[in-house]
Length: 137
Image (cartoon, rainbow, N blue to C red; front, side, top):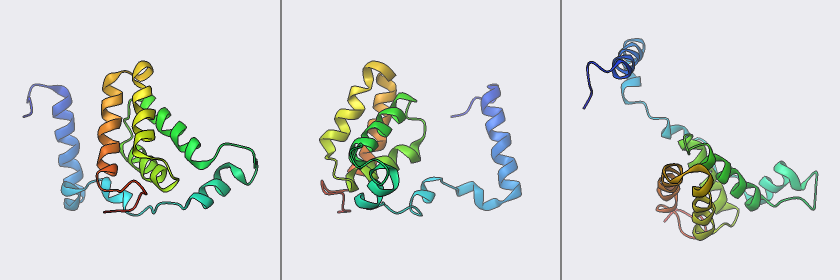
């Protein structure tokens, strides 16, 4: 339900109308489709690319991704694609669903319960379609 007197709703409707007039296919556009273009990086590649190559004693891929998830949650879990991709990569790096949930839940104290709930919803979208080992069911 939209409120015609609400300036935000009017602005959103105008932007949507403009996008449709430029490209009618944008009417059904969903950024979630972009996520399918990015494969899950193997754990060894993650560790080589993001730290182990330069600092063999540094954080492993799983720990770095848990920190990334905590940071994304702290930002209010506003970057849906980034949260979902981080969870997907975490599963590939060996994180358990419990570790992912604990990381997000730990941020409630700092980011607030709404941000934690949003991050949990996004993580659930990924984890509901994955086994504990990170493979699609």
